[in-house]
Image (tube, rainbow, N blue to C red; front, top):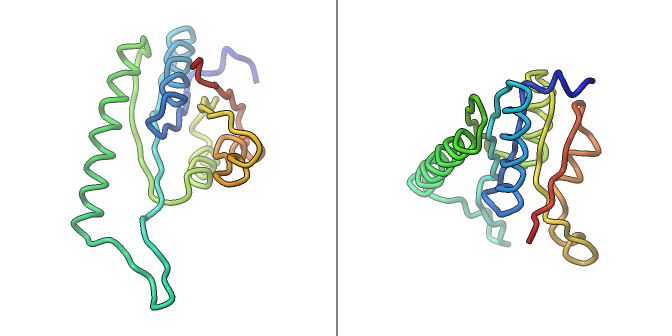
Length: 150
């Protein structure tokens, strides 16, 4: 795929510095190629499994989480525009972030995926895993990973 076809850019975010740097790159590419950026956030349902059963959050807590996510996504969508993206939208999903990102790319709506990576190695990587690594391994579209400068 030619870089000239990178008009529909997906930028998954977790609202970290790594994601902010990825958004800067995504917005710059969208500006250069006359494209648009979709800022995407996926989060698992919070809950705990105990010997006595599973503890799930109340509907009010889930609504608060969804509202907070919506507010943050709107801020980041505006940031993409401020960074020079000609157009920006936002989307969210509930589930495993890597799975949700891959599912979204399978629908064929994006030419490029720009994702931040924390660059963890060793024990931290084994303990926390890497959404970016899982996405890179299984994505059907080109993936540009961005590591934060700090």
